[in-house]
Length: 114
Image (cartoon, rainbow, N blue to C red; front, side, top):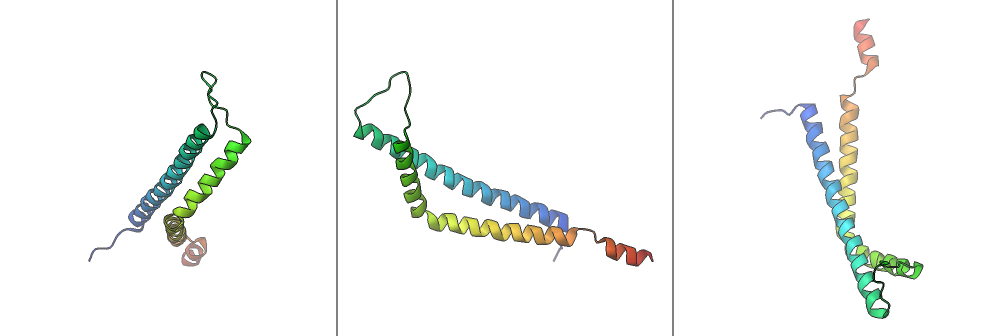
């Protein structure tokens, strides 16, 4: 059995954490994009107003509708979000623990020098 150097282990752990963070961010972006699409579709269906060159007019009511859709979609995917969040927290704790163990301890060096 071969041993892995602590620096290599730390870099692997950090890469894994970045991957988990990226996955969580991806899920949250997907949810926000879906909420926006649903809001825009619902807004277009509910009002006959069209804004040609001036672009869309996002009102406070539209924002509340968007937030409502966002919360509903986050609730639907809460298991996935919670799992990734817990995994991220565990990875943060493991990385912090390893970094603490890898830090040089000046007290030990001073005792050895004396």
